[in-house]
Image 1 (cartoon, one colour):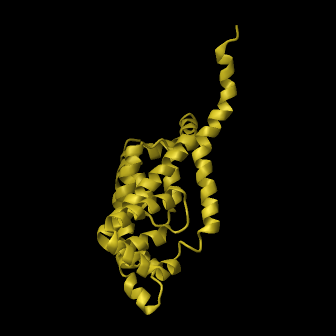
Image 2: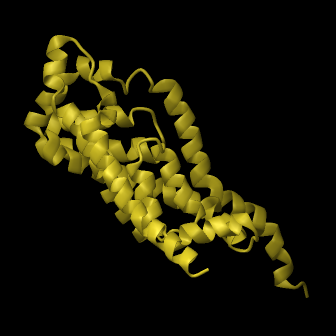
Length: 248
């Protein structure tokens, strides 16, 4: 009789492909989106269709909220162009509040989807390899593991870290899903409030025929408090480092 375990290695390539299939789909959709949607998810498109969007919202408020959040989830989950425009649209249609809550909800669910796809595809295997490694790589991973909450909030709060990368990095480091979701939801709130409030003022911007100032987040009165939050997030890391030096 033939031993059944002898057939197992033949299934490994297929299993590996299936595990990577969600990431492959995301990559394909992202490329297609960058090619075919770049002219639709723009500030100009929002300006041209603003009256239609407002009319639909006034007639179908709850449906508009659900469709908007679903669209935001798709944009983030498939890394499509237009996340910033979506955030501005949330403010334009629903005001700063509750608009920023709709923005944060859609962004968090979309981010969680790509996080899970990346971790299922190769994050767990890469995390295991890093855990079994030695030298500087292992020290870096251990340092991140010891300060996961602080690191997760930092990569969300620092405007220089691309949102896409902030979704992928934790998938390589065996971050629990619950921790990822919580840090994402609360970590993106400051930036979401800023851009949603910009979107809430688009009515006047449209009237003047201008474009919104998306660099406002780097203005001192905005970036200052965000830097303060970054310092608070990094404080536990600094305290642990100082304690470690004293223990030497």
